[in-house]
Length: 195
Image 1 (cartoon, rainbow, N blue to C red):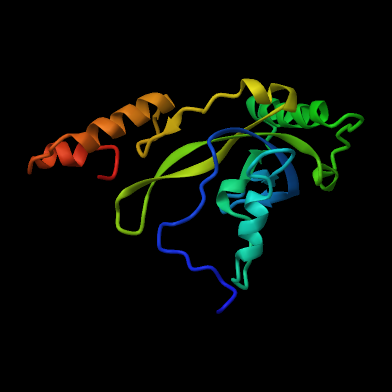
Image 2 (image 1 turned 60 degrees about the vertical axis):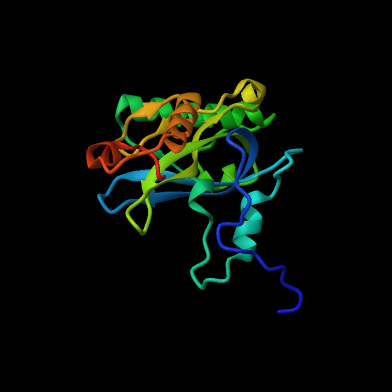
């Protein structure tokens, strides 16, 4: 009790959006409820990043018996024989190979652990426990590390499944928060943001 620093509700560090150098902490074949197979990749922030160890700290601070990596640090890369899925999977593997001198994929997922790559983080809306719309930081994509400096914040995935540019999302949120909203339920129901 004496050694723990108090933290108020809602007081927590968030991950900066955009590109980060990440290290693969685990990679395993995952079969979803529908039977679809994917590679479940969990990462942590690495390199000289100011937020290095961001997800490892969350993992270490988790006292639950079913301890696991945070959703924001996890990406599922689909494994299917369909051409588009193979191309995306190959793009991920190529990015890992390009980012780790001498590494060559041997079709064994455990060889990915410890490899570095660029992780791209963006926002995705969701319904919280109260039924309000929130936005969470998600690992959206992987890129080769040589592209890190050119990474922009990706489009925001809205609750309806559509995407808008991050700047537009901020502007819309700002304009909604600055307006005085009357008791017009049509307007309130159409708001894409929590007030």
